[in-house]
Image 1 (cartoon, one colour):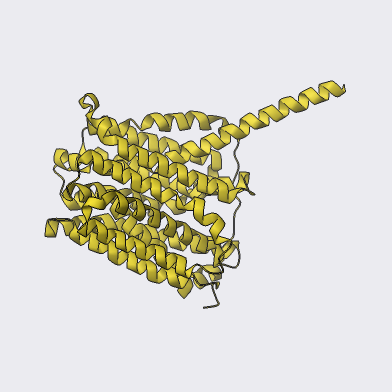
Image 2 (cartoon, rainbow, N blue to C red):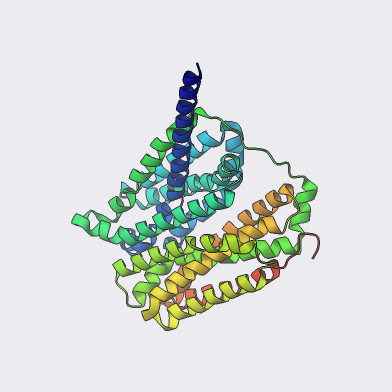
Length: 404
């Protein structure tokens, strides 16, 4: 009897191990699908512009559509999870991303724009619900899991951007098949995630009163954190959308420009490894945030005046962008009193931040059309980084909402 119980226990332990491994693998594959399908466009943007005769503003809109989708669809993700459960909602997110990616084989500018918007909706659902899943299933490893999946996003997004030009040139398959090929990884993510559909877990609901929401929207500190994240996303998405074009104008080949954009993305995921243990040791984060944002402004200037050092500027700029983003997200927790305040501040920062970020690629594209060069866009990135430095210094103070 004792041996039978021991055997049953070992079988159960093995089943739990397999279940946990599939869950972790599924999370990383979902994360791998949350960036590359939209950032992969940038290295082949010039080819898209040429094929569909797009002007710079229309091309900017193509890179902005996902951000608009983020702002619109993010508030709906919680309702979807409440109705269907986290597991099914994340499955729906993957299906939407897959449909949008596959649609790129259709030779139509309209379909390309619609498909990109669909991808944006799927990514928005994943962005909102994946942290909730991690908090539920890995409550004692939130920081490790979060930094790991952010790293996965950066590595897959960066690698895809670096490989998209060689892939498009391989046997002349073209940019459409090269972009659509990412559907293979999305399909793999769907297959690995299928066992999780047996669960129908509803997210824990945090009630946020109107009084709490009003207090957040009237708080100077809340606006400082929101604008830090917003202006950081503003220049980040200009770089994600236009960096290859900026580098090509600076004398780099399309393949090298795509590789550098990939390096930018990978570098943006690395700060989590450094900052998460560092944050616990700092009394406040004013000097850290200020220094990183100012370094970002310097790198934007470097791309303008010394494009031959593009590798240095791209990697450092990616690191600064990712670091300011992680710091801003950390401030959402560090500067609030409870989960209700944090939820209200997160919603405010996400809504305003994505709307602000959505204007970046469009304005940069319009400046390029007007001046016929990328200098105006780089000056815009410098100004945005300087604003990040200002709001980062203010929001880095060791205070909470209501104390300022």
